[in-house]
Length: 206
Length: 371
Image 1 (cartoon, rainbow over the protein chains, first blue to last red):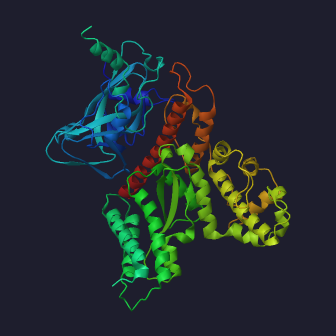
Image 2: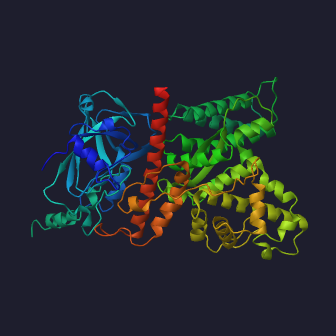
């Protein structure tokens, strides 16, 4: 594995179609020596408290996908407008940029240190061949609300080559978060292995 | 003491005032809307001041204004809820600007039902207040459109809104209404003329001609921006809609849209185009879109790069055509069912439009800062 440097990133962004897609790339200044700064997007899913005592993603909750949505409220913004992130509040958002990775490149997502220092946490990774805005799960770990600005550079990705090309999107079922342009709630409840685990739990005394 | 006769109206007036206060205190980011809501509050306070002898207001006038503000709050609530479909609103705004409508704010209401609509221009509070000569300072007009909430993130299925704002344009300029007042020779060319009942009075024939012509104008208005999309929705949703006295049949609507897009001539279509000429003699009803090359982008699940306002409108028909083309997604991508294809292409179209909006805003403000 090798980490992409500035010159390799620029090379991959050139050409049509480009190997690497960052749409829109508002300024080349977003490309750093070994990372690319990405911006806060405009669609948010804000976690809210409901009558449910917990978010149930166990196999017992057969309709839990619908219930999961009830724990989040959608809100949209325009470029340059503020968004307040409260302490301990989970907010799902995605980057302003739509990312297209080649099949032989993987990316890590990190917060920018300026935001980490305010207590804003996020993290993630992008599979080779990924298509979509980068999903960010924001959490304010501090004890003071932080006002963010839509379009500000909030995170960065670091891209690495894989040893071989992958076929991530060629599997039988489409990927859960493929081509997404706005945040979506967790699809953990759709994990088919949960049924198997439920069956095991039922027969523990057998 | 409030009289028994005005108990309900006064209560409604104060309840709406409460709603407006709530809206004004909400967190949204449009100065125009903030100012409009402020003006509405002032108007209602004026009406609520029943003791005022300086500006006596007739009860009927009070009711008209209260009703208009009540209706407007539905749209204002939609546009201050932070769930605005910015992408389609941005596209519609450009279409209105082509027709010289710049002093307006498009407000949107998300409906649980399947309807698309645009409130009549004369029902907006500012218009009613002006007619009643109430002292107000509205700086913008409201364009009040509504569409199904389920299409909140499906811009390609929201294209009937282009037809709806065609109604706004017609009401503002009354071109078709004017044409219909002396168009006896054209009635026999109306696409649905064979269905006109010969027992109808001449007056009824004129009214049917006017109402049908307005609908056809709005269809052509929509087709001039979003091409085939103008026919797609009615063809798919109401394919067998017959002639009624207020609306043409789906068949005649679709045929006229295709005639316009294929630049075929007919006495009726030519009359619509003639009526819509600008001061330099050019028809305003002309092809105003360019189809962007979406195929290479969408086939690779990427948003397309829109280069101009013409391509902004054109992304709707281009995306629709791509959605209807078999073979997507092609290997090595995993197959998708039709619903997933529609959702994916709608998402890519939405992102393509939003990227165009973002880049324009960024570059315009960058230029301002530099200068």
